[in-house]
Each structure stands twice: as structure tokens, then as C-alpha cells.
Image 1 (cartoon, rainbow, N blue to C red):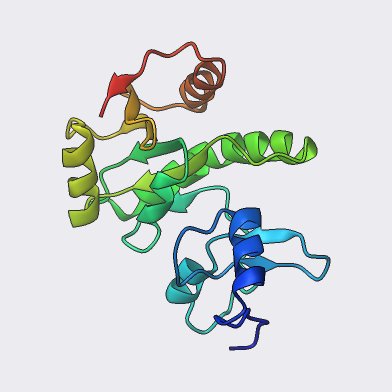
Image 2 (cartoon, one colour; image 1 turned 180 degrees about the vertical axis):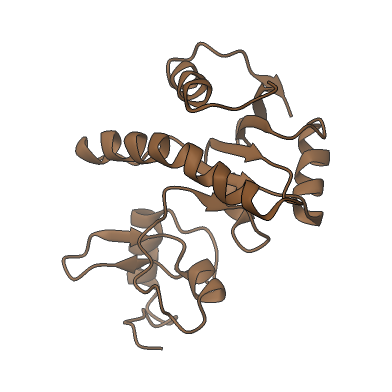
Length: 186
């Protein structure tokens, strides 16, 4: 383990760090830079997905492919999830490229205000985990399907259109951030 760790027996420091970083369980790996600024709260997931640490220190990617190992992030707050038909290998990558500029714009806007972005961005293909997510949230099997899922509020927002364009995604995100969308219960 090439990083500094807090001994489990140091309860006072662990308690302060838990409050500071919103840690609710163990194991947790938070990655900070040399100044103490947060790089990622998802260090544990990153280690599991990058065993050889080739992408260390794991700066967050604007758009993630939804996997079993990062699905827990859906519980951290509202998440835009673009469901695609991953039978076509290029469709998942094309979906990432479609929403990446919008994700980058939102992330940069909030970073400039020294705030966390109000949304995480995912592309979900076809697999058992995605099927379970669709079942849990009562989403149709349509693809493409643009959604914002807010698990903590038990709410979903769905944009079911024939074709997803950058303009549709941007309008959907803007309307969500402006509280113009009507939530459906999960």
C-alpha cells in the first residue's frame, strides 16, 4: 500500500476524516493530492478497476461506463444515465462522446465555484447489472434512453426520444438543474 493510511486504532482522527469526507463505511480509499485537495472519493473502486495503477492518481472521468464496481456511485446523488444498446460495440463509446462535452461543461462550471458538480454522468450498456437497475427503477427497455436517477430522493426523470442529440441532453440537464422537470417515483 504506497499511500498514507490512518490506523484503525486512531479513532479521533478517523472520526474527523469521516465527517470531513462523508465516509460512511469501510473499506474507503480517498485520494488527495500533495496539497490535501480531493482527487477522488472512489479510490477503492479505482484500485479494483485499475489493479496495476496505470491511471493513478485516478482523476475523475467526466463520463463513466456503468459497471458493477462503480454502481454504488448512483447512491451519491443525482446521476444522468444514458442507456444504450451495447450489442453494438461502438454505441457505448459514441454515447460517451455525445455526453462528455456537456459533463465537462457542468463539472468546470461548478469547479470554478469550488463546488461539487450536481450530477454524475454514466453510460449504461446491456448487462445483468443494468437490467437490475432498470427493474429497480421501473424503466422501460428502450435504448437509447436518457434518464436522471436520484436514488436518495427515490426520483427519476426520463427523456424517451428516438434519437439523443447533444442539444436534447443539454436541455434535459438544464431543465433538471433549474427544477423544471417533474420527478417520477422510483
